[in-house]
Image (cartoon, rainbow, N blue to C red; front, side):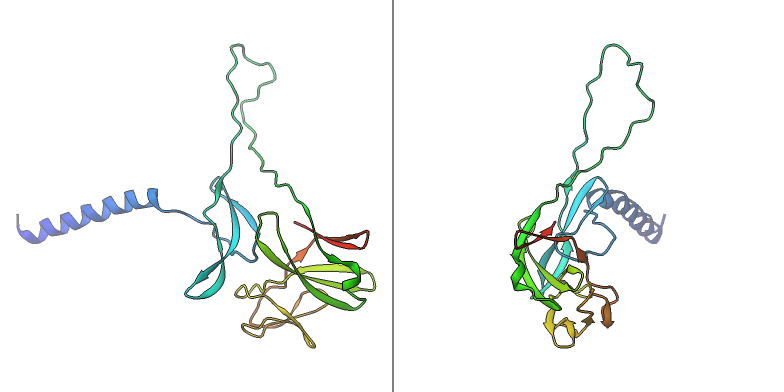
Length: 199
């Protein structure tokens, strides 16, 4: 047998070995886009949280390494249960939401807006745009969905300083690109003169 076929066989074997072994060690992340800090999703039995990270000196959003979702274990019984069913129901993840006080009601006048920062339920600092109109208050994430920069309140609306995207100051809709998605709405309420974000 000549050297060329042996090399070809050797490379083919090496390639097959790598394609079988490497996927077992590769860390997989969710395929959906991480749009704002604190966003969560489940993927392959893990709970992932969107966090701010620095890449080449720029702050961007990325999924963390994820936490394994615990699966409830049942102990086998010695006698069969008459109510047992052949199919098991999947375990659901319950995420406890909390009310976060972000500011005083008096800080946001009618037809006005203000950006507040507060620590979310994961302990990460997040920004919220709180807008008051004639019907009440609206809260939006201050994270631009284009590249994850924080928007600013300007005369023309909510402007992303990174690429000049413009959002409607009433509801967060996109008025000018390059952003393709509106700002995310966040549950908000007022009680006893305090504004609360639900996260």
